Length: 122
Figure 1 (cartoon, helix red, strand yellow):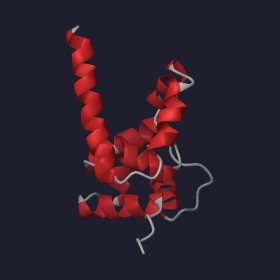
Figure 2 (cartoon, rainbow, N blue to C red):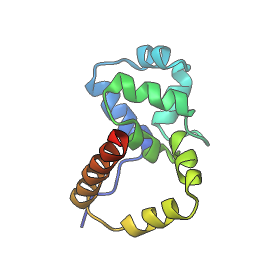
Figure 3 (spheres, rainbow, N blue to C red):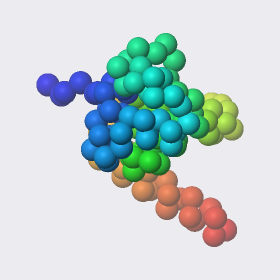
Figure 4 (spheres, helix red, strand yellow):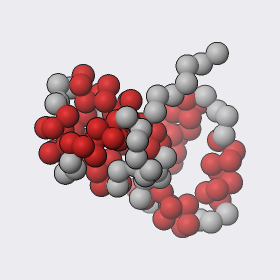
C-alpha cells in the first residue's frame, strides 16, 4: 500500500522548516501574514493561497510549483488555456494517460519534447 500524499499545509511546513525559514520570515517573503501562513500550515483555511503566492512559495523552497498546486487543490494558470487550445484532443490525451506510472509519464514527456523540437525546427 502506498503512503497517503501529505496535505498542502503539512508539506509546506516540512519544506519551510527544512529550508530554515521561520514562519515570520517565510510569510514576509511570500507576502502574507504569519497568522494566515500558520492557518494554512494547520489546514485551517477554506481556500488555498493564490496561484502567485504558491509559485513564490515553490521558488523559495526550491520545489516543484506543480506539486504545490496539486497539493493545494489548484490548477496552474497556464493549463486551462493549453486544454482549451485543443478542446477535444487535450482532454482525451489526459484521460488516456490516467493510471500510467511516473516512469511511463516521463518517457512520454521526453518523447513529446522531441516532437516539439522537430516542429520548432520546421
